[in-house]
Length: 193
Image 1 (cartoon, rainbow, N blue to C red):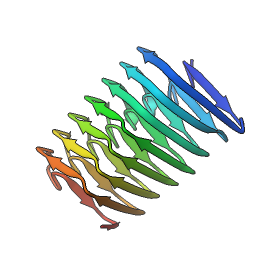
Image 2: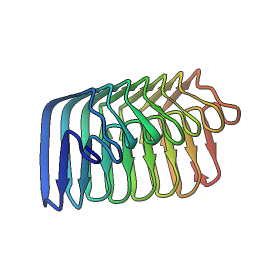
Image 3: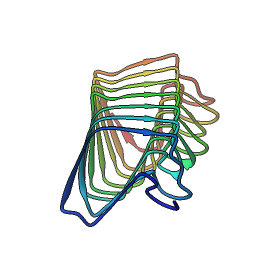
Image 4: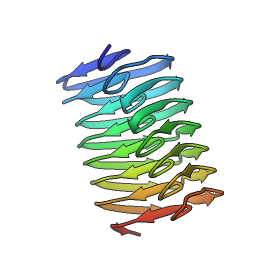
């Protein structure tokens, strides 16, 4: 499939997806789970070995979205967002674990081009990218609370988090053994507190 190889949601008012395993799905363009104009609640999702051009697992272009208890391991993006691409709206990630995901360019796990992403009580371990081993904010707002970033790595900037534009607020969060040419934990060109 070219987009949404596993799940494709377009202009639904809301949707709930729970207790799902996504394994070894591939799509040529945007996310094996694609949602546009839809607010989606994802709960208890296990994603392993999925790949796409943008958003290796989830491509969320808009809406109010929630990801709770997501376990994502070994997913990849040919360009950006090894697990999650966020275009606009508000996306909240809670009690989730991201391990060994990759993106060739931006955000080994999460790539934000607009909107707001809230990350709570989640772990990012051994993810890789060129910019932002775990998270890359190209534009928009990132809020991180009570997270752990361990062993994430990039070739260039932001071993764990890279902020190009927009804002980032990070609180009660631990960074351990993240690696980059510049900014082993966080590299920011924008407002970061």
